[in-house]
Amino acid sequence: MVKVDTRSIGKVLNAPDAWRFVLLHGDDSGLIREYASDLVKRVAGSLDDPFRVAALSRETHDRFEEEATALSLDGGQRVVWVREGTDSLARPVSSVLDGAGSAVIIVEAGVLPARGKLRKLAEERSDSASIGCYPEEGRALENSVRQMFAERQVGITSEALGWLVSQLGADRIGVRNEIEKLALYAGPDHELDLEDVRICIGDSGSASIDDSVFLAMEGDRGGTDLALERALSEGANPVAVARVLLGHIGRLRRVKAATEQGQSQSEAMKSLRPPVFFKKQQGFERALGLWSLPALTDLARRTQAFELSCKQTGAMDVLLCRRHLSVIAARAAAAARRR
Image 1 (cartoon, helix red, strand yellow):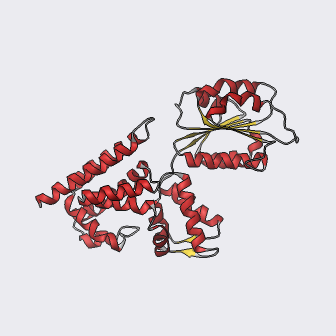
Image 2 (spheres, helix red, strand yellow):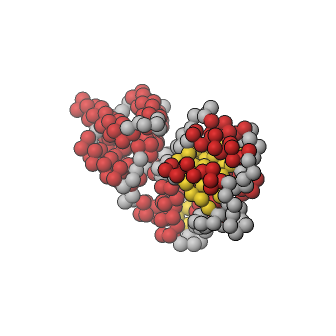
Image 3 (tube, helix red, strand yellow):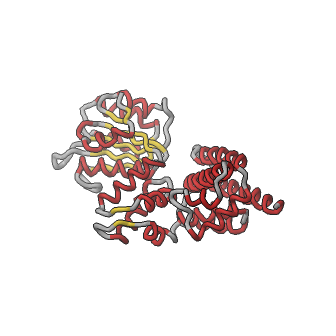
């Protein structure tokens, strides 16, 4: 069984000749596309060689067996790159693997059931690999971001890295776009600090998410709606909103817990890493006055449930996002009126 864990992904990407079939699946479409593109280039030398790369969309899946058994006209290794893969491909892929064809098959899929036919096929064959692609977070995301900067010969301070990771969305393409922008701003052999990072991404969708989350927790219903719509129009996704919201709730909880143990509010806030941005400090303090520690704990649980709902197939994630932030803003506004 070749089910590839996170630590072994590099071995698969660096040795594409060892595999006949690589299945990339999960809910991080950007990471799936990144791995697929890397594999295609390693096998065929480019992404668009008409003699060696056959890229199939959902509408052209019926050409799979024809492309997978075709001979290379220039003698090089062929790649059949299938996008939007589903379990309906399991039978034709198995047939090709058991036949005389030699093309490398790379399939991009979304979230597949653990016992699904395509995953079972990739995980049970010794010449195949199944790679789950899910959004990175925490230390894993920090390590990936630091590595991306290192590849571009750009450094970043720990403080700046911590703040940047807290602002990034979940999708790999979005993360890479932000890294490219920051690397271009910095230039080779420069180390980015917190102010550099804030200047560069302060007008991006991540900043709009930040605004919508802070305003909701402060009870500003109108401001929340405007900031959220701006974030969504700039390409933000509801899962990214959930991640930023959970991070904000977690920081509020840490300060609340510290003050209940006798620490002053200002001291507790100063201990946060990264620190609260000076332009956001008043909003952070207002939220502290509106939410009790039990209420924040309950809200964190509800937000985790909201994030999970957004990941369900067919979920109306944008509607769920609008409703979740609207309810939070209404609760905070009601708490403010009671004060």
